[in-house]
Amino acid sequence: MSTAPARRPPPPPDPNAEAEVFDRLQASDYRLHRAATLVVTIVPFLLLGLAAAQLWNEALRWHDLVVFAVVYPLTALGVTVGFHRHLTHRSFETVRAVRSLLAILGSAAIEGSVIKWVADHRRHHTFADEPGDPHSPHVGHGGGMAGALRGLFHAHLGWLFRYDARGEWDRYARDLARDPAIVLIDRLFPLWALLGLAFPFALGLLLSGTLLGGLTGLLWGGAVRVFLLHHITYSINSICHFFGRRRFDSDDHSRNVWWLALPSLGEAWHNNHHAFPTSAEHGLARRELDVSALVIRLLERLGLAWNVVRPSAVAQRGRAL
Image (cartoon, rainbow, N blue to C red; front, side):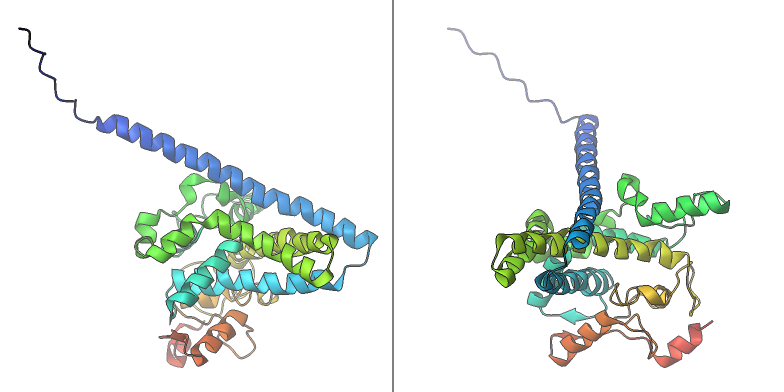
C-alpha cells in the first residue's frame, strides 16, 4: 500500500518580491495620476479657446453666466472652506453633513481627491519654501531670471507632474484616513468630478430649455470654470510666494496679493495665512476681502460651525513687520 508523499509547507513570502510588487503598483498609480493631471490641465484650456470662439461669434447667453456664477463659487468654497481651512488646518469644527458636503464640493473642483489634496498642502506648510516643499518657486531652480521663471512654472504647474513632490497620506493626513466618511468621499472622487460636470449641463438645460443651452452650460460651468479655478489655485502657490506685500513676519516667502483676493475667495491673503495657518480668516484687516471667512461666519451664526480659530489683535501686532 503506497502512501502519498508529505506536502512541504509553502515557502515564506519574499519581502523583496512584495516590495517589487508594491513599487510596480506605485509606479502604475503615478502614471495614471500623471495622465489624469495632463487631461484636466490641458482639456479645459483647449475648451476655453472654444468658449472664446463662441463668445466672439455669438453673444454670451444670460443662462451661461448664471451657471458659471452658481458653480464656480460652490466648487471654490469646497476647496477654500472645505479642503483648506476645515480639513487641512482644522480652523473650525462643523457637523458631519456640512463636513461631507464641503469635501464633495471640493472634489467637484477636480483638483484631486480630498485626502491627497490635504496631504500635499500639509507638506507644503511643513517645509514652506525649504527643501521638501512640493511647490516652492524658490528651492532648487537656480538663480537669475531663468531660475525665477523655472521656479514659477514649477510652483504653478510643474510640481503636479512630479510623484516625489506629493505628500504621503499616511504621514500628513492620518486623521482623514481614519474618518470613514472622508475615506469614502476620497474613493468616489471620479463620481464627484463627473457630477461637477453633469450639474452645469443640467442647470443650463433647465434654464434655457434647450440641449444647446445644456452644452453651453457645460462649457462655461464645466470646462471654463475648471480652468479658471485651477489656475487661481495654482497662482496661490506661485504668484503669492513671489510677488505682493508681506504684512507679517513668517519663515517663508508668502505674500498678500490683493487683486487675487476676490477670485480666490480670500486665499490670496497668503502671507496672513502663513503667519497664522490655523486661522479661519485670511483677510485680517477691514479692507482685506475674504469671502470664505464670511461663509464661515455665516455657518457660525447658523450654529453649524464652532471653535472657529481667529488670531487676536495682540498676536497680530506681535508678528507685524
